[in-house]
Image (cartoon, rainbow, N blue to C red; front, side, top):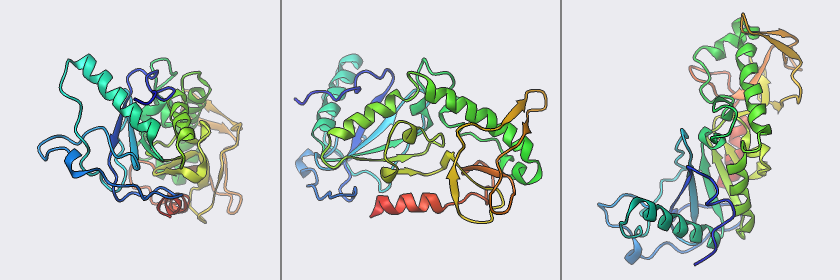
Length: 286
């Protein structure tokens, strides 16, 4: 069989799930053959982990991670390896998955906030800067921007600690190595808001961040659809007692209202600018 891709077996707690995508298109080409009907899984069998040679989707699962199901839905996959003891079955599936990864023309990756959490990472919350933004935070940017930035300031610092950790981006970089070996490269669909794929070196032309990225800012009103990069050094402190931001907080250059992370937060976040996501999605469907 094909050699196991670098990093595939070196990530504890992570399994690769690969599924057939007969109508999926990844930019560059992608007119591979669908799996033979004789290889399709029976209807009463769960959707399996292995797919066609020409169309490959890898959904990574990590401890406490979020599943991400890319659109369109996966079709039935070839049969799984015979049932065996749990340890040997896992090894067999991992090796079979590795063979498909190694022989794929392109790789489509779906991942959530859990990919940024490893046992030695500083904080799981930092993986999404945190994906679970508290209810009411979008409203705070209009009513009390310093309270809002007190919340997000802590999340962004956790995110920076994760990015700077030796193991914080290990899984993202391992996947990047796999796509470097694929003739048509790869594309990532991310439900994470921490900008970790970008931090790991993933091309922004091959990335869809469905819920936005905390590495970008936007106007909190908003007065326009523009986004801009998060400054490398936020120029404010945090009051741990009041949990509010002290000093100068980011503002919109056009209207001078408070800026905010370009992230779709929980609750009714009508101010989230969707233009950046729309541009990413257009490249994906091109």
